[in-house]
Image (cartoon, rainbow, N blue to C red; front, side, top):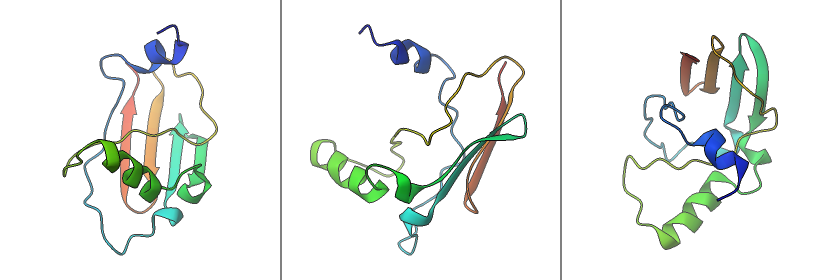
Length: 106
């Protein structure tokens, strides 16, 4: 407790999720591009190979302590460019060529 990010990130509706995409064994996680736009302006845009730990390293580490099953969601950090959102902002988030999520702050 006492950490400002807990209250700022954990509230009802704080985790919008796109449709769930099954993992394809041919998918190269390091080349996945994560992109976030706020009101049409790019705020975050990075490849997964810029992460401190790769998606496969994250899965491997978590699976040592937690039984993972299909449909589990794993939340990690995000690329640089984090900033505040306000009522009325339109958000477009995507994993390039795989999935897209759009919503507005109400």
